[in-house]
Structure formats: structure tokens, C-alpha cells
Image (cartoon, rainbow, N blue to C red; front, side):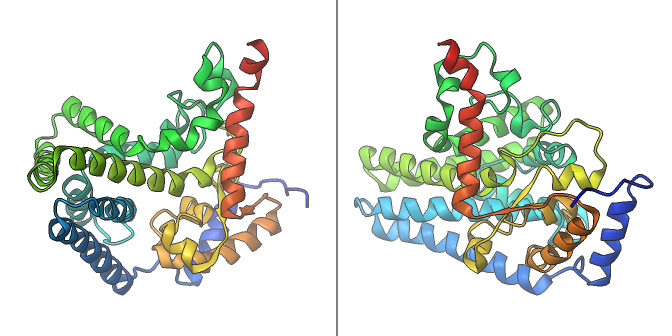
Amino acid sequence: MAERPRTAAGSDFAELGRRINAAGLLRRRPGYYALRLSLVGAALAWGWGAFFVVGASWWTLAVAAFLGVMFAQTALVAHDLAHRQVFRTNKPSRRAGLIAGNLAIGMSYGYWMDKHTKHHANPNHDDLDPDVGPGVLVWSREAAAGKGFLTRYQAYFFFPLLTLLGLSLKRDSVKWIMQRGKVGEALLIGAHIAAYAAALLLVLTPLQAVAFFVVHQAIFGVYLGMTFAPNHKGMPHPTGDEDFLRKQVLTSRNVRGGRFVDVALGGLNYQIEHHLFPAMPTPNLRHAQPIVQQYCAEIGVPYEVTSLTDSYGQALRHLHDVGAELRRAA
């Protein structure tokens, strides 16, 4: 279907917003979040309890894997808090976010808010979205010019590099805090680092402590990266001329897969709906999806839905394509 001509700026999104509001999908879900925060918090506490019960045994690596998963689930909770999906106002959202982010997993809530807000404002924009800015991985051919071996074959390094994502975010968190002099955030992250290091060094042998750290941080990084990688990578990069609805829909893709995928990805598999309505509670996204998809069909805006495995395939193919010119030159 051909895209219909746009009328007044923002009018297409305004009509979609009326339909979503009429369906009641922007209402808070306090019961859902009370249960989810309780379950994630209990699982995190259980994991650390198991760590001390297992003690200096190599079974501690199974605990490390479990805690890697739970750190990622805690990060997804912090993500929802940052978007004010849980609480209506900023103060309780920030307080809970500091506990979940800085204290529980050692990642700055303020840094994440700053970075993620820029991403939502301009998803996939080469100059304005920090998630696709030049780094270890390069997401555009223009930025790849002059790069070396790693960029030429970066698709092969994608998943191995994700093992370092958790550590990278912690490093960037500390750097952001120091640059802005956030004393409260620094104290909370300092408490997390001190408690984490003390637990590993006092309970485990030195070799076990190193192995625990590697397994825990690697699984945390891979899981966290795999929740965000399917959403935009390999999708079009905007020119800056698009209206809000098209800028969000055309740069995002949804991932189908049912309730298990909903839980595993924390609702981010409904990326299109999340980007259009960032404050929408996670359980409402699946109900908003058919409304948004039907509306996009009416106005002729492409709406991308794929499987989880294909979403990773598209991201990897895009990374490989970015390095094509470099491989030919080499």
C-alpha cells in the first residue's frame, strides 16, 4: 500500500494517540509492577543467598550464571522506571531507579537516563543516537571508512563483544558520574562495588572469584545486549525530515514469540509501541500492538515484525554489510 500524503504535522500520531487513549492503554498497572518488582527483587536476593550457601565450590559458577540473568532483569526494571511506567512522577521513579541501577547492579541510573533519552529522541540517527555512534562496533558505512580488521569482520565479533557490555556500561557510568559530580550516585555505585568485591574475595578462592566474575559479567552483558540488539539494528537510519510517528516506526522492529519472549525481553519485543508511547506500562504493549499495526496499514507506513532469530540475523547482516567496502579494499 502506498503511503498516504501527510496532512498537518503530527496529525497522524495525534489520531493514533486518541485510539490508544480510548483503549485505556496508558493507564498505570500498579498490581503488575508490584508483582514484577517483588519477583525480580526476591530472585536477586535468592541468588546472593545461594552464593553464600554454596560457598567456595565450583557450583558457584551456576550461581554466577543465574545472577547474570537476574542482573539483566533488574536492568530491564530500571529501564521501565526511567520511562516512568511504574510511578507517575519523577521523584519515586528516580529513587527506585537508583536502588535498582546503582546499588543492585552497579550501573548509573542517571547515565542511563541521559543516554537512553537521546536514543528515544532520535533512534538510529547517525549523529544524534548514542547507540549507533562510532565505537567498537560501527553501524554505518560512512563511519566505517578507514577502520581496520575488527570493523571488516565485526559481525563475527558481535556476540563475543557482548560479553564485555556490562563492564563497558559500568565504566561509562563511573566516567559520567565523575564528569558531573553526582555524589549520591557515586556513593551507591561505590557501595555496590565494595560489597561485590568483598563477597567474592571473602567467600571464594582467588581462582573461583575470577571465574565467577567472568561468567557473571559475561552472561549479564550478553543477555542485556540481546534484549536491545533486535530492536533497531539493521533498520533504516532517518534523515531528520520524518514526523514523530514515522521516525519511531520506520527505525524500529517488533519481535514475535509469545509470553516467553515478552518476559525474556522485558516487553522490548514491542519496540514500535514502546517508542511511540514510552510511558506505556509493559503489559499494555501487547494490547497496543494490533491497534498500532492496523493504523500503520491504514496510513501506508511499513510496520516490521519478525522472529527473534531473524532479528539477530538482520543485525548481523547489517554489521557485515557495513564492513563490505573495507573487506574489498583489503
